[in-house]
Image (cartoon, rainbow over all chains, first blue to last red; front, side, top):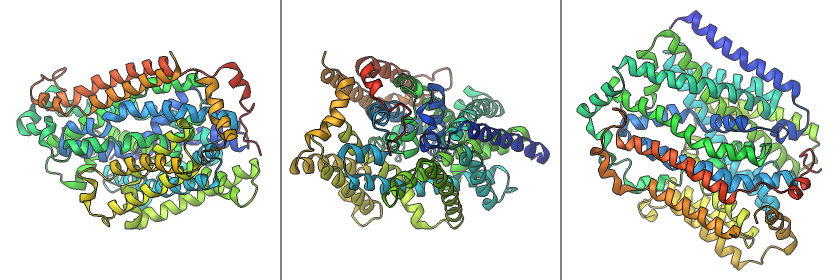
Length: 492
Length: 85
């Protein structure tokens, strides 16, 4: 790699992020509303890019491309097919009603919204604990994935420990001073860098391999199974169906995504995001799929986890040093845009939903504590990313499923006036326990009837919510009027 | 049309999109349908079409069941959005 050029581009990139952090800090008031929610004033483009950049993680160009390398074009529909529609739909289904409640009652997090709907501190506490429990391991895995890709693409020039440190430190540079505004502004910048470079990268790799049609022609000769979904055991119909309940419906439950929805300036801004989101998801995962499949021709013979690094390998093997550096910047952008928002979300939840249980925290104190917690969580995540304990990695493996099975309670709370706090608590706890029993191998796999565990756990959450709600006293009329009387003013 | 009926129509749209995603009977076409633009096999190009359909579905859902908050609701929003202490 051309070291001087590489360092120059990286420094320029980081300098822009620092500048954004500085400018964001200048306009951010020291109130919790402004620091954690950007004053609920985000426009369509800002929310769109913020949701998109946070939605695109290291998995997009590492895990997903690796799957495409192994199973072929079917990976596209398997991983992102249902998400293309249902993810933006959940921005309407859950996001819009939550946004209305946030605007009306000042709610800023899921524990506040759903604790508020049920008027229940236990419901709020369960949301707090579960969201932290699933987000923290996922955060660590994002750092690990990004750091490994960084090390691969730099041909070992950046050791793993240093790559992790750079990723975390750069994320903090603008998040600490400017809060959500800082992460959103950098998301816009990083998202644009990512989109432009990813498309250019696709064309550059295609050119190096002889052109789009030529590569597909080679695949049809060498491995025609890459074109036929029914030849892959990985994406067998029962897995395909089950996977509809994993990543696609989990997105709205991620606290970093949910908070961004609450930060929208108006209903109209959210509509535009939901309308155009399918094209962005389809586009970026399309690029990742093509790179993965093409990689099977360009760099054949990779097995298992090695296949996950096909995109960094393509960049490193087929492109010029300038492209290699740009590829490095893209990976940094992707990884950081999810890590910064996850870090901010967990510090927000701990500040606003956990610490406030023990003492009154003023708006100014919340901002100060939020900043301290950002550093604490970042340091903890760095340490865990270095030692990589298997317990954390095991939880991260089913974190998406854990988020997904919280969705029935969120939908029930927003649409069903008869849902009770007891029903919500039971529907949050019991399916989560079952999910652990299945994933940790304590319950035999046969008890899921061949489906991925997330599907029976999701159905179980619905059944428990309904049954326990009917077995317990209905919510009082005042509480129902507060929520559903308010909704009735809009939805008529 | 009442909001409940419109919400039922939205549920039907979601169901149709779900079925179109889990359309396993179409997998037989993977080796039959010609490449789109000379390089996109059916397993890939199907989801390009699905994305365009998803935009149309969202447009319909927005028209059917996503009303903007009326004036009295907007007036009830806390002015600066700050959570009451």
